[in-house]
Figure 1 (tube, helix red, strand yellow):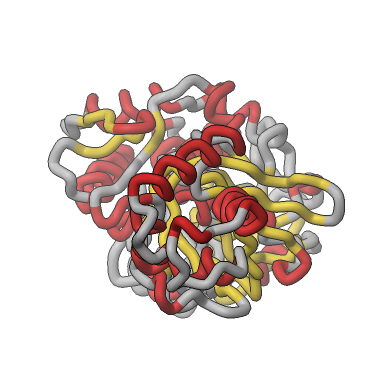
Figure 2: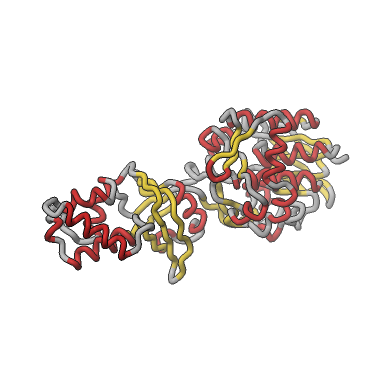
Length: 405
């Protein structure tokens, strides 16, 4: 039996604490907030998309950074193990669009309650309102954890303090400091799964939601992202599922140097779109082009597209020249968006960056520098797309850390 301290009472910390205690270790979990799982409460808009019902290989395909590193964790505790964990403890689950898994109750609080109850049954001591201040390596097999209330000597410690996203939940990057104190490198943390500010937000399109559009990003001569989905124009720029996925791919690049192209009609190639325009122009030949274009675009995007195509909005459809029609097709298929920067950590779903993975053993989550010091969850340089994959990272890495002690 070992004395184990787990720092952080979120998804990964709770899973690590439960798993270690289930192996017979004496576990104390330290959480600086007044309650456990504060970030869990806001996931999935309060419903908690706790995992994605897919096999480990598909899960790893949805990990943006750290997929190879997470392979052992993904197979040690896959999505079906997560679902079984909760269902066996009395939480019915349901699978929705995109294999997203939610509690039948649609209450994120139920997920936290199950984790907390499992920890208590396993014998975990839970200390709330207690913040870690320092970590000291006492000798090769022991370390000291100093908090606002006590100094603990332990045989093993697990750092599961999260990242920087949603700082109101207590994710303030504490774990990065503890990792640095222990000699670890930190990959610069950046917001992920977050909206983008545009150089010139399209005010007329604010609140406009688009479905089945294609967003492509290029950096230099390389296409680094191209995907079809939903996009939302906001007061600051762009957001929505497509943009959140984009952010995960380009958040480590200078946004202003990324070329972003929006295809409003990916289902129509140049020829089909030309046929559609000719038909619309013929049927509504005496109407102004700004009215005719409403058949192809939401009202808030008509003027921006016409401006991009250099077509006079009040020009009659029957007087549109071939060159103008070609420019319209170009604007519909390749509308440029000029990125300024990512929105802040306060809006980011997760943090990209964190403890350098080259210094962590992927088969155990143990530090390669300090024996019996483990890291799991968002504090590591791992992140994934939306859909339950990030919480699965937390559960898988937390399990592996707790099981490896």
